Length: 375
Ligand SMILES: [Zn+2]
Image 1 (tube, rainbow, N blue to C red):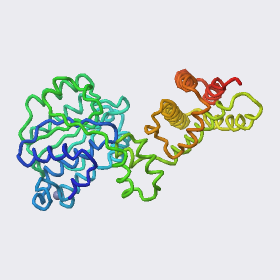
Image 2 (image 1 turned 60 degrees about the vertical axis):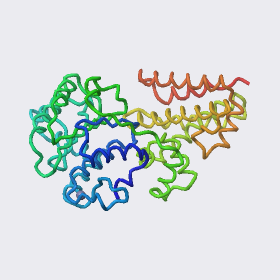
Image 3 (image 1 turned 45 degrees about the horizontal axis):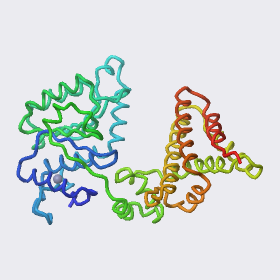
């Protein structure tokens, strides 16, 4: 049954389905959880369950409502599953409009007439008042082809006026509509919106649980790689499944070159490391693509420094880059706590430099050489 495919949080899923079974489902539901924790997947599963034409309730082992995944409603709602692609299509469609229309067109994703996805509107990436107005214009009409109208706001970054408009809907929601608000931080929503909604939190999964999911779904990764990805995705199964292992490893190799060169100190034996360092940092250029590459590198550097910190404070079980544990241990022997601290501060300096548009490769060199231990 489809709900059994949802990763983790069994009690929360059970409660939500039980409320559906008793026809006591709230009109406004806040689904909170980290990026990649499954909020959107869950909202779409619930939307299908509300509207499935086959309602395979008794087919399941637990007797709770589920969805068939095959009927017209299920398949059309499922077309919204790939949110990134649907969102990109909507943005492109708007780009192709005449300038006057472009201004007045708000972004939505809609693959079923009664299920509307409201993403944050670019370039500010906020929910705008015109998007909420469109919700208000449609929500009081009975659904056309479904039993329940469903609205899914994929972000809690509302413009002020938009939040106030949403509040008006929540004060008087129609019998046949459900609003889902997805958020990484419920505190970002108005207290008055929160008090009119029921909040469900999707907790992080244990690394072992993610590893066993990956064993089924990413058989192309070996056990070491699965263990690494499970730790790096911090309990969010969506992040684990879409993890770009190749670019992570590439960034990490660069990060290791930098840290090792710094740890090697200023003696002659370290000349090779220096040459390698400058070759590496030279590949970091300006432009949008370069920006992404260096962000990736900085995040990776932080994660390695954190691992070194764990090793030095005797908390080796928290290390995330488990596949290079031996290498990290060796590094942590030659780096003391103060050095790691200094390195983390240095990274902050690089980030500030980047904001001032200093030459990328230069500020990376400066970072690595500033950390060299004077022997
Ligand atoms: Zn169905």
